[in-house]
Image 1 (cartoon, helix red, strand yellow):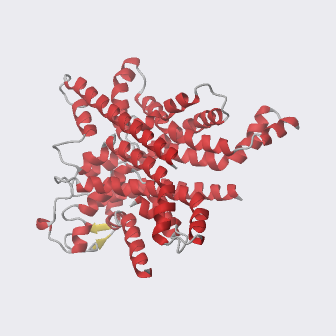
Image 2 (cartoon, chains in turn purple, red):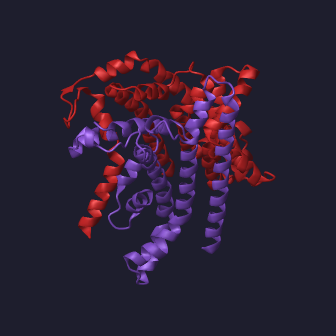
Image 3 (spheres, one colour):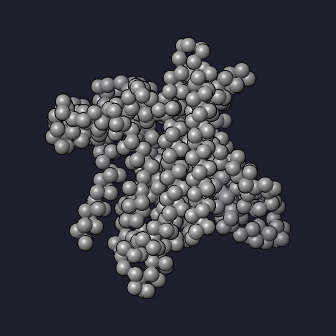
Length: 202
Length: 256
């Protein structure tokens, strides 16, 4: 979604300023507010079920269900706006002249997208994808609000263990925190390596 | 082709806007039972409930927290950014990696680890929250200011010094005006960190520092008060969006 938004916001023909502005307005919305909004939108008597005319009893359990739909939707919504802004920033400063040259040399729409625009967007896209992953991994409030009690993600598990009355659970909470931090570190290092390889190839 | 492109753009706009629609409707709905598509009774009950739950004080505390984080993290980020852009820092990659590490470390893990230490040292809860959030905001201010200083021409400063300006005058009348757009952008990002934080305020603040996100969370986890949740949520969105407008204006003026 972020890539599509960035492409629409920087397209040479019929550039959409509205989408760029909407994405910029979405970025500063706190994740917690996004979670509250997704709850009002996707709950079983929420706005979407009213809009589609589906009875609450047959509405799928998007909030607190087994597939974590509302949690995924919230992060995808917020992070897509972030990805769009960064990728659009890169494309708007660098893509226009390359795309024009490719068009002059006879490249069609798809050839320009595949061989010019996407390779230019790839580093920013990879970096923002890694940042989104790490952010989501370490974030607490959205999964706590829209997820289900069991199984719980690492952040919610750590918070529950840390605030439990049982003091013996504190070291377990610390272990979960260290595991999460290490996982994030490994992913970032892998992403950095992949991005460096991408830069060498180009 | 045109129709397909228009439909695609419509879907993208819908993707961004749709989650905000129920917030706007619920904020002014006194009664909105299923299956009505629009509220049956409009009103300000949500507003009254939000005010009664202490939204006013929480709003001020959140704004103050965001402002303090911005006031501390922006100059620190500017100094770090200037030093890193000048290429005179030994092992600058390591320094940058340390400054950016809060992006990788989950805030809950840091808060959880430091909570015990801060308690033992007797650091007041509010101070602990501010310090942790300033550290969390440093990556954003450092990246922004490093990019700004990399594009900044130091020749202007040398010229001003040559013409007899003091060090402080050079900072005030040459550096600050030239870097104002970047400083505003960095301050905005740092403000956002303080304004929208939940988990650090809960873990370190220990429930004594009630900010707006804490109110949103407690209202949203209860049922039957959707109007109040919507009002509190909109209250959390408006200040950052307004600030974004100001920063955008500053950036446009800076380009002229």
